[in-house]
Each structure stands twice: as structure tokens, then as C-alpha cells.
Image (cartoon, rainbow, N blue to C red; front, side, top):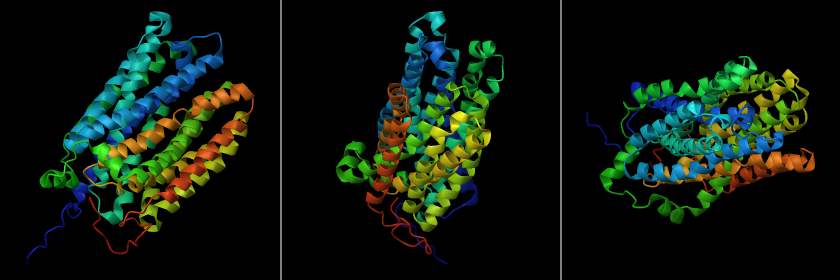
Length: 445
């Protein structure tokens, strides 16, 4: 019996071992990177201000710590630009190894940094420099991990496949929060002296695990096809902007909506709530429970997006997060454990889980393979970067007005804009928003 050849760019038939290897490599590597990146966010909210930016004013310490938090996000588009460029020209695998090393070494170095009391102004300078390296690492990591999954997926399961690297976010966030939560049980003096460093230093061990997983990968079928046909773009990002300006704009706003959920709920509210006298462990417990549940809701969202469409799942997620901001701003300061857990489950497990589990496939399938790494990274990272200023803006507005209402208005406006951007993004021919998925389609890879 003759075997019909595969259409160009279509992934090979699903092989159980190969599928598991791809999904495992994308999820584990991304979890390690997010552990590193969001470990910093917890530290910025709880300890980095007094250690690296001592001031007579607690508000000034907070603003300075949030500014360095934002610095990592500012570097993310740069990482997406650099890593995405070479990912489109040289391949996905090499860039994924590069980003893992960059992130892991920068995080380990933060754990070794002397504080302001020890070396003065050089402490915050070095902290910002290492945070920028973290941003470059995660800026290139996200797009590569998504493409590893998306370009090995059949079109009718692209949402499910790309949701697996997305689970790296809650898994990494959960691991980082658990590590920091465990360290915070130390006596306060010990925690501020050396205990906070332990979670950062643990990154060195995680690098080794990630490298073992990723070095065994092969290139994706889509990139192999690009190299075979000679369609490699000389300047992929410029080509993507010329060919898909509308998608890049609306995709950036959609990513901004995802990012503002994360930055407001996991950084701003964590900091502002604990400053009202609520115990750190109460809020961290809510975050950890929400992150654990999100490890399930993210792949569920990807699965549903293959069945009922990306747009429906995304808009539902934005709406749930918008609902959660009300108890987040007005009830979290009460310190009630049930309210805290419920708020974070609604915002992060359900709202953000729906958005994050769907956004990767929604964006990835709208760019051709020869520019996909650059376009996907730039679009997503730019939106996330803008959102990183959310905690800084919220803290400044609250300090100036003494009211949470400006933060409420900012959050609701961005979520509404993100939902409208999703509706305005053109459908891809193989997206479940356009076509039924009862019969598999190949899609462009």
C-alpha cells in the first residue's frame, strides 16, 4: 500500500512518545523560566524595597521596588526582538537553550547580590541590570516554547498543545511563591539577611533540569520546511509588521489585557494588602491555591478554545477578571481568608486561566512560519511590558488620591479594550472561530 505524502509544513502524524516529549519540554522549561521571573515579583512586593532602596518613606521604597520590577518587563520586547530574530533564522531549539541559561544565571546572581547597606548605590544598579537580563531571557523564551508546541500540533488541537507551555506560568509562579513562602517562615531578621536568597539560588539546580529536557529536542516541522524551501526572512520582524500590522496591534492590546491581570493581582494587591496589616501568609495562601488550580484551568481553556472558538474563551476570561477586581480592591484589606482565596481563584484560576490558556494559539496561528517567532514575541512582549507599569501607576494614583477608584477604572478600561481587540483581530482560516473542528485541517505551519 502506498503512503500519501504529507502536505508541506504539516506536522507528522501524532506519535505518543514524540507528543509527550514536546509537551513535557515546553511545559517544564517554561515553568522554570516563570519561576525565576515571578520570584522577583514576590520579592519586590515583600523585601526588595528596604534591602535595596532604603528610604525614610515606605511609599518611596515601594515605588522604587516596583520600578525595578517593571525594568524586567521593559527588557522583554528587546529579548523577543533579539531571540525572535535568530529563532526565525537559525531555529527554535538553540534559542530555547539560550533563554534558559540567560534567565537561570541572572536569577542565581540576584541571590548572591550584596544589599544597599553593604555596597551602597551599586546594589540597586546591579539589581536592575540582572532584572533586565531576566527580561531578555523571558522575552525570548515565551515565543519559542509556544512555537515548539504549536508547530508540532495538528490545527484542530493547536489550542490544547499550546496550553501546555502556558501551564508553565502557574506552575512556575506556584513554585516560586511556595519557595518564598517557606523562606518567610524564618525569623524576620534571618529572612531579611539570608533567607530571601535561598529561592533565587535554587534556580541553579533548575537550569540543569531544563537543559537535560531541552537538549534532546529536534527542530519543529514548520521551521524545517522554511529552511528547506529557502523562505527565511532577512529581517523577520520588519516583514511581519508590513504584512500583518492590524494583527500585531490588536494582539498587543489582547496581551496587555492578560498582563494587567497578573501585575495588579500578583504584585500591586499583594503589596497594598500586606501594607494594611494583613499577614503575608494570608495573601500568599490565596495566590498559591489559585496558581495550583490554574495548572488545570489553563489546559482546559486551550481544549475549549479548540471546540467553541478562541474568542469566546478569551472574552469570558477578561470578564471574569474584571468581576474579580471589585473584591480585590475593596475586600482584600479585611484579611478574610475566604475572601482572599475566592478573589484570587476568580481572578487568576478562572479569569486569567481562560485568557492565558487561549492567547498563545490565538496569536500563533495568525503569523506565517518564516516570521512567526519574531512577530509572536514582539506582539506578546510589548503588551506585557506596558502592563508591567500597572503596579507603579496604581500605587502612584492611590498615594495621590487616597482612593482605589482610579485603579478600578484603569483595570476595567484595559480589560474592555483587550476584549474589543480580540473581536477586531481577523480570523485565521483554520481557527475554530472560523471553521468547525469535526474534521482535522492542516492549517499553515
